[in-house]
Length: 313
Image (tube, rainbow, N blue to C red):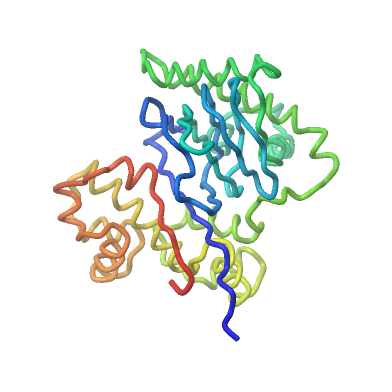
């Protein structure tokens, strides 16, 4: 008897701009029919805040489906939380998005010198995904629109202003989620905790000679169990994920520096240039030097970097 095919899940990896804890996806390109020919969930490596100005459809958050539309609304979706947006048939929806590095943004603030209090706040922010009508939460909706406008205009000191407002917004999210947190329920849409920890570890140590054993030890599970979890949730192996992050970081160096390709390969954690070239071509479809000369659709390939790993990859 043949094995039934596992549902496909898509991982969309975003790269933050240098020294910036927020990535804004704004403008008319995000007015579209969402979910066309897509029947699977996806997740991101950063917290996503979405704002819907118009259009109708459904939002799937974990195992729950919600209606949106007819009036403005917003979503707050933690990193590594399964979700998708689907417009009603043929209906254009106008959304804009903020992707936020929560730990990076809050890392510099002091809560009376108490590290545990900051940790609880981060946990509160990430405790669940929500879809809210703007009219029911006017203060939070107004903050989202204001932050997006700040990022859109890029006036003097705009990033400092945006960071301040983002901090206030996240504090409000943590407060709203406090009652939910006290219940102690595990969010159904979250990727398994060991996988999240392994992904965070790779983000911090991709430039080092990592092995799967390092990740498994960090997560306090066996290598075999970690491989099974990666295969189930990400449809890729731990090594494939390491190389995905490394290639994504290499793209940043290729576009923003004139560093030799061999140096970039070493800086991004690849043991040999041939290994780097092979993985770069597999993921980006061209050799590093070719990509550097003509990085077509850079924003699509890097800032909205995504790879669909089908069964057997």
